[in-house]
Length: 329
Image 1 (cartoon, rainbow, N blue to C red):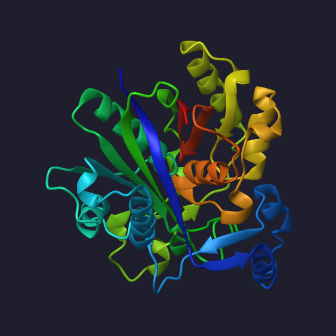
Image 2 (tube, one colour):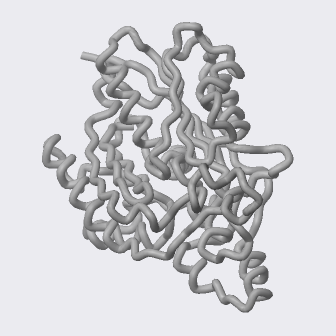
């Protein structure tokens, strides 16, 4: 019996380091106090892309390049390439096609872009696992999640401008006969009724080719995210019950890094210690689709998990869909 495991993971951060104090001072000049807002989000510093030199595609490519070299692989070794982003540098051609060209991928490779907003990379992971399980001749897959959401915000909006960070994350999945590592199961919860609260572009792409430059910025209506913890708990308990595991079996939860408060609420909802979760949003800012995988990357670096450990990865995409995955690292 074969399984699908994470072979390697790498991260490329935006090259500029920005601290929360600079955002606080920025908005003070506009007569706005955002100290409590940033405290609630758990923000201390951010990695921000240099707009002249970096973008979503370049961050994803640099992470991929380092990962391939680290794993002793070439582009032609990859059977599937999936690029996940809600802030792609290009819509045409797909980011995956461009990345395929940059790494000199195989002519037989399957490529696709996936956008499920902040849930994109986990959904891409789940999708690729299912494809590989259905096609036993597929051996290796590359999943890239990258965002430059800082490019989509206006410096007049305190709900978006001081929230995001820019980063790319690359993951290689590999078919394996090892039973102590690999994907176990996944589940979703979705409700699209409130889709209009967060939109980009604000009025849709059909309205972008105008002189109304402000329409190119992200619209963000403040909303209550307290509901997430309940659905996260429901989804995780379903996965555990379906696969004969308990909460005690989970070594670590790599969740959405949207806000520290979100992590703390989920810890309380599950009635598990806070250290069962990893939070890196204080260092990176919120990196969107890649955030649970960057949390995993940091957990591996910090040796908080070992091969064979049971982990839960979950996130939520606006507005809204939740994906939760159970796997052994």
